[in-house]
Length: 243
Ligand SMILES: Nc1ncnc2c1ncn2[C@@H]1O[C@H](COP(=O)(O)OP(=O)(O)OP(=O)(O)O)[C@@H](O)[C@H]1O
Ligand SMILES: [Mg+2]
Image (tube, rainbow, N blue to C red; front, side, top):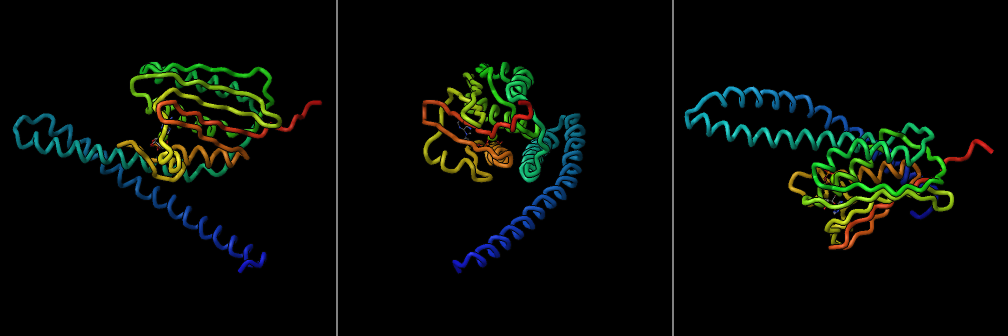
């Protein structure tokens, strides 16, 4: 079984099975989304109708409808996260300045951060080489990481964005001063659907890792309970075109 030819065919077979299952799962998620949105819409109409009624029976029904509606919203969110995860595979690369992407993201995220009393502090190195990125996917990466930091610090805190050059690579670290993670949590965070949050999908970090790896990069997590979390992304520098 250890013969390299067999190993190669085994690998090919596994890969094609994986691809087929991934495509099926993506299609299934897609198929579920339409009926779910019809259900959601009708629940909304029921809520509107029932809100006008004052008798106790209708009010009881209304409370139950609201519970179903919340669960529907959760399923919709889960499906959207899942489809994003499934799509994370095909980056459209363009040469960009990482600092500019981070700065733009910070401006976009600032209102949400302010509302959560999360202070954003960029420390961006001025001599970074360019990187080749899919800008949409990279924005998803930043959003997932920044949201995790916000969710980890419900009473507020700080989130630092640190960029630097390390040899032929560019590093971006997001450092928060939240509660950190236990070793057990850390060991599982990259498993799909692992979450410690009541309404989490558990797809944020797996999506981030998948996107970064598709860019030829790596993600490292350093975290200690009570001492915050540091997520370091490392990306290859783009080959210089100018002399
Ligand atoms: N900055 C952080 N500080 C503390 N714990 C974190 C941090 N980021 C992630 N975690 C832990 O890792 C788990 C997995 O994170 P991930 O982003 O994959 O999923 P989620 O945030 O739970 O759900 P989703 O992102 O899909 O809505 C979280 O539930 C949380 O326990
Ligand atoms: Mg998350």
